[in-house]
Image 1: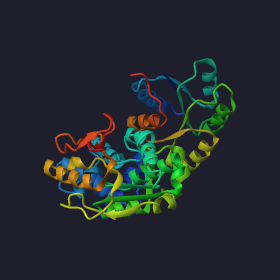
Image 2: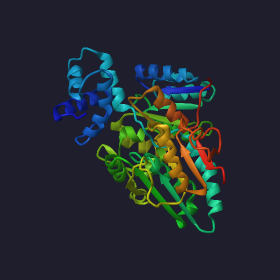
Image 3: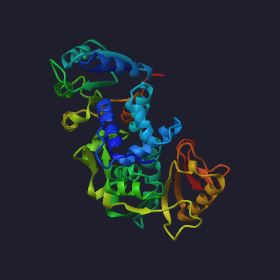
Image 4: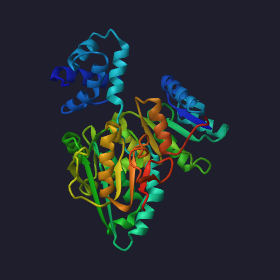
Length: 124
Length: 274
């Protein structure tokens, strides 16, 4: 089970990778939306993508729009990773096609809970 | 344990810096409920002493503990997921079928706490059973604490509270942002009758009978004789073919043998006579 983590912060990528690996996911990372689209093109489709909002090159909103507009990836479950300050953007992200959001700071339990809402589990 | 204004401000600042969580004035009760047990566990006699210890910043583990206590919710929307799946897939379809003639369903959330459970049920009904719009759905939510009931009635939740268990599409559909908090739709608030109620009362006033009683994660606080008394009162409040939900870690086994588990996993019980 593969998860794609998209964040320009290496710290957040590392933390999420550790949590998701412990939950039984194989994690692929990208530092921004464009790189994430590359990862989608070059590898098997992940079960979930966790997407930061503010990123260089291509931000979270643009990435979500691109994914939903594509014929191959339109059903990919997308989870916005956000802060409270950006909550208005979550509403925007949901209308663009995100399925869930995860608010920073998060705990492993919160990540698991949000994945459960989407019915997604790693391989234990 | 009480917290003074200065200590509250300090905790609010720390939690805001460390965890991006906003604790506005009026949230003193939340800090008191969460940090009281921490102070107690650490052998500190008051929250004031805990905050003094925290201010000295000698112990990073204490900071983590405080942040954890302030960010961990005892209750959440759609808590435990499974019981709500069971309600959606089995209980409500069965009830709707059986009550099709009378077009009336009555629900009692008997340990409603700050309202997440009854509101989760109300959203579940609206999302999945639109035909109930034309039914008489009586929805009673009770708790022993006036403070949590007042919060439940207000339907105002922190960012942290809506983060837990509430699917994002439901947040957007049924809540609106009010300052730093989220307020649930007035239609959902008015669909529920909130009442103060002590489950430990020896006999209950005439109420119900109910098709569905939610009594989750409250029996753990009582001893066996009290559990028996509560379950016997529940038996009288439940319609003979009704459903009783307990918490996932709770059971009627060895407490009240007139109930039988509906399925093994959901802590959903029915009267054996049903």
